[in-house]
Image (cartoon, rainbow, N blue to C red; front, side, top):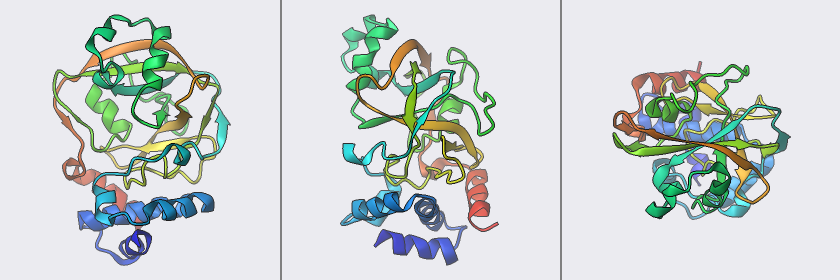
Length: 249
């Protein structure tokens, strides 16, 4: 059982060992999850390879998504970040960039549900520059997009969404990933974990991928300025040290 193995790393493992610290972080996310989510996570892990879960989070099924508390989003704009290729799998469709026409493209994304953020921190302070100015590498790190590999010159799509009601993310939404952050101290939003500092960073929510859950109001296309490879083996020593101190101060 993955949870039992990960608990050993959490309580007595060598946190200088990257594999064990990833297991410890996964168990911390288990601890920070509500009891109902813990139970569903245990069920979801049945028959799964524990190492494989750490290396590449599972793809949650539709019924495993958006199980967190439904919460209102008060004012402001929320953003969805995807590769342009994901948003426009048929190149010819890129000629249609009017935001209102992009809803169908978002609903057709392969993911079961979508993560959104308003790019503010836990205190409500705006962290990132405007979408037309933000550096894609910084954006990926602050959103905690572990596993992303974007090549220089590739195109990223940023969509502004109007949202009234969303869900606090759960560990299941993340695919039981180690790099997700449970934010048990917050009821109205989740928090990303910065892949630069290892610290909680941006407010985030989950949206069901269904008509009526949101409206697309603006669209930006951004080019990646330099290669960005955020696979676990490329995360900085600062990240791992910060996470280790969080587990055992």
